[in-house]
Amino acid sequence: MAQFIDFLNGIIWSKALVYLCLGAGIYFSFLMKFPQVRLVKDMVTQLFSGGDSDSGVSSFQSFAMALGGRVGTGNIAGVASAIGFGGPGAVFWMWAIAFLGAGSAYVEAALAQVWKEEMDGQYRGGPQYYIEKGIGNKPFAVVFAISAIVAVGIFLPGIQANSIASAMNNAFGVPTMVSGLVVATALAGVIFGGVKRIGKVAEILVPFMAIAYIIIALIIIAMNLGKVPAVFALIFTNAFSTKAAFGAIIGQAIMWGVKRGIYSNEAGQGTGPMAAAAAEVSHPAKQGLVQAFSVYVDTLFVCSATAFMILITGMYNTYDGAGGYIHENPLLNGAEPGPVFTQSAVDTLIPGLGSMFVAVALLFFAFTTLLAYYYYAESNVAYLAKNMKNHKLVFNATRIGMLVMVVVGSINSAGTVWALGDVGVGVMAWLNIVAIIILTKPGIATLKDYEEQKAQGLDPVFDPRKLGIKNADLWVRKLEENKKKKVS
Image 1: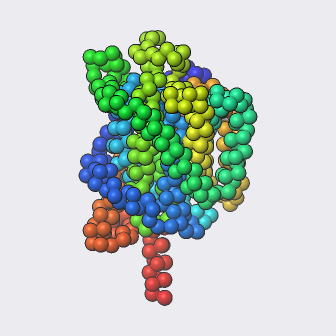
Image 2: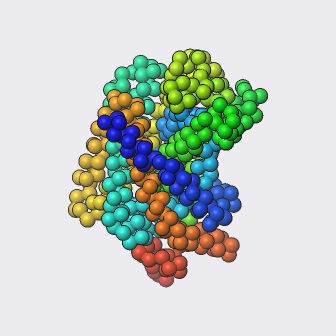
Image 3: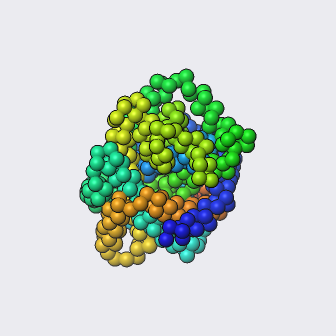
C-alpha cells in the first residue's frame, strides 16, 4: 500500500505540477500587473469592510475560514519537513509560491464569487461551480468535486488529527485514541451547526492562535537577533547554490518548498475558493483580494515564523537523499522532520515547555483546519446532491464520515497520512489550475472592472452582463432585486 501511494505521488507531484504551480502564479501576476504589490491597501481595507447576511458570512469570517484551512499542520510539521528534505533553501521557494500564488488565489476566489449559487439559504461555490458554469464542462466539474471530497473529507483530515494526537502524546502522554475522540467530539459540536457557526468559531480562534504563535517566534528571533542576517544568507544561498553542500539537493529544495508551500497556503489548490464563495460582497474582486492576502498571512508570517525559529536555533536535520545528513543537530537524536524541530527550537526559549507550547499551538492550528476541511467537503457534497430532496441527510452522513476519519487518522502512521494528503492536494491542484487558466479572461475582467469603478470613486458593484459573463444568475437576480427596492 505504501509503495502504491508513493508511486502515485511520484506521478502526481512530478516536476510538471511544480512548474505548473509556479508558472500559473507568474502568468496571473504579470497579466494583472502584480496586484499582490499594487493593491495591498485594498486587501486590508476589503478584509474589514461589509457584513454578513442571511445567506453569506462577512468578508472577515470568510477570510478566517480560509485562513483556518491554510494555517494548520503545514505551518509547523510542513515547514519542518520542507527543511528536512529540501534544506533551508526550501523556505525561499515557499515564499516564492506564496508571492506568486497570491495571483492564482485572487483569480480562483473571484471566479468562485462570480459563479456562486444559493442553496438552502447559504452561498455555495468553488471550482466545481466555475468549471461547470464558466467552462461549460459538467463531467470535469464532477471529477473535481469527487476528488475534493476524497481529499478534504478522507485523506487530509488524517494529517491534522495525527499531528494533534502525536503532539499531545509527546507533550502530555495523552493516548492517541483519546486525542482523536476528544477532537472528533469538539469538531462535531461545531460542524453540526452549519457554515455560520464554523465562520464564527474561525473568526475567534484563527487570529488568536496565529498572533500568539508569531509573538513567541518574534521573541526567539529577538533573542538571537545577531543571527538573522546569517539565516537569510543560508536560505538564499541554499535556494540557488550548486557549489555548497546543499547544492546537491537544489531540486529537492524547489520540490519540497513548492509542495509544502501549496499544502500550507492552498494557493491554486481549489479549496480557498469554496470559503471565498460564502462571503457576502458587492463585487467578486473584493473577496479575491481578501483571499490573496490570506496567502500572505499564512506563508510570509506564520510559516516564516516556524522557519526562523528552526533555522536560527539550528534545531533541524537535513537528509542528503542517500541515507546520510547534510546538516545534523545531535540534540535531535536523529529525529525525523516534524513538530519536534519546532518543539526543540521553542525549548531554547522556555526549556522543557517547548513541546507543550507547540502541542497546544498545533491543536488550535489543526482544529481550525479541520473546520475548514469539513466546509470544503460539504460544499462539494452540496454540489453533487443539489438535485436531491433531503440535503440534511447527506450532510449529516458527510459529517459522521469525517469524524470517523479524524479518529482513524489519529492512530494511523504519520508517513501514511502525509502521503495520502499529498495525493489529495496534488490531484485538486492539477484540476483547479487547469480550470483557472482556461477561465483567465473572466478572472482578469473582475479585477479590471473593480479598479475602473474605484478610479471613478465608486464602491464597486458587480454586473456580469456588462463584462459579457454568462451563467452568473445569482448576481443578475440580486441586481434586479436591488433595482426594485430602489424603485419602491
